[in-house]
Length: 465
Ligand code: 6PG
Image (tube, rainbow, N blue to C red; front, side):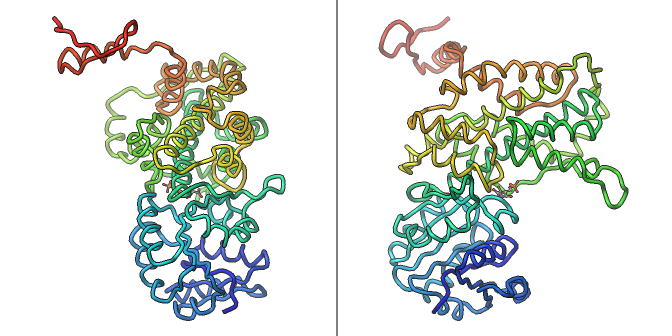
């Protein structure tokens, strides 16, 4: 009984996370049913206080009380199966942490189920991929505070650091950790698709070479668009295909897969009545990308995008403004969803803290997040980032870039669902008057659904026609 920390699931994420824990002076033991994975951990952990086992009994017995056990196993039924496996061996006061991308209602169910048995259960978002897990992820814990107190020192030690501040904070009650991670991923889908559309505008719209495109992203990543996703994009354009020696990006099939977190973000936003159109469009575009055969067929029927010669030297600045404003608008949508969810599910989220721990370690880390953190610190109850004075100013000066990019895309036939959804969200958000008075009139016309008036209180109905 002398290990500080236990990890169930020694896939690449679990293995890297446990090695990270050991690097910070905590002893750690890993459990996996696959002996090869246990061996891989032991091999990599040589010289560290790390052990692996295939026996759950050995694993549980080896842990100091109260036990701190983290699961990094695929979301879904496997999480329940692992919990059932461990449960008879655990004692009251032990802590189980689910570090996977679990669906947040599952976490609520598990918290209640395990609280009845005296076990603390937490749903914790972990972002940063394999590299993050090994050298510093962003960690989004939610659930019982007593449970968090047990694991806080370890999480603070292993998390990414920004200005020496660890990228971890207790997000809120019940499934808050999984919810915040889900929206993180929704924003991730949005930003990725915005970058891809900007690439398409450069390639098929302006006829630029991969080299120029890569260099352009590289230059942007040194400015206000500085972010992990823009940086890796610049890198991707440098990679040659080992098989043919050509640019690898051109060899990759244009069908994007998804594991569900982006879709859940959109689905739940709809349930809450919170608009996140950039994220919706990103999920939809992954769906359209999957219809490869039908797209191939249609491409033979319809005219194809034709590059416009670049008449204007400002193209790079215009695209930068477009991408930057769309990034801001996407974060604004995701964070507004978090504020609404916090009220609906009593999470008690602190959005400034969310922005703070997203500044390092995670996939959507970006220098922009420091400004977002400050905006929510200034006004904790901010309903939407676009209502913050500093961001209003940024968008005022940059959104016309987005408009110009869209004009070019539409003229040349490039699909820009996410860039377009971002601009429309912005244009709608800043319109005091929208044409939905007509929708209300139509609803009342065909269904007597009633309407409210601009000049009087009350509910009205008209016998139309
Ligand atoms: C992260 C990532 C991680 C995973 C995505 C990929 O924050 O480290 O978001 O959780 O790579 O879930 O999602 P898709 O497979 O759905 O694109």
